[in-house]
Length: 132
Image 1 (tube, helix red, strand yellow):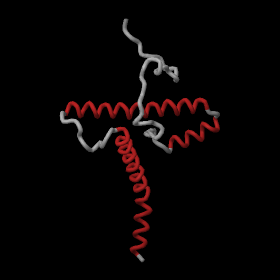
Image 2: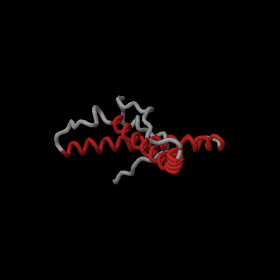
Image 3: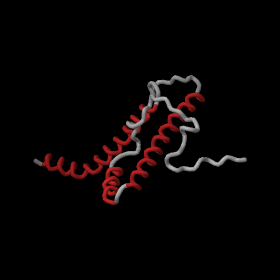
Image 4: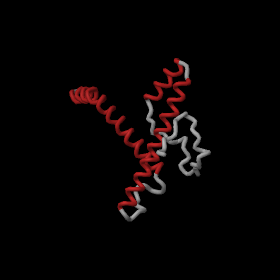
C-alpha cells in the first residue's frame, strides 16, 4: 500500500515537469520534421564534400525555413487585423497553442517565379531602397 501512495505522490509532484518536458520534446520534434521537410533528399546524408558547400547548403535551408515562418506570421497578422474582436480572440487562442513552424501549405517541390512582375507585393511592404 505504501508503494502505491509513494507512486501517487511522485506522479502528482512530477506530472507538471513531465508535461513541460513532453511539450518541449514535441517542439524539438516539430523543428526536426520541419528541417527534414525543407531539405531536399535526405538531410542526414552529406551530398557536398567540401565544408564550405555544406555550410552554404545549411544556410540556404535556414533561409528557407525563416522565410516560411516569416510568411506564416505575415499571413496570421493580416488575418487577425481583418477579423472582428470575437473571432480575433478565438484566433489568438489557437495561435498560442500552435507553432509558426507550419509548412503543409507550402509546395516544397514546386517551381517558383521570382520575376519582378510576380514579386508585386500583396502586403504593402515597401521595396528595399537602392543607392543611386
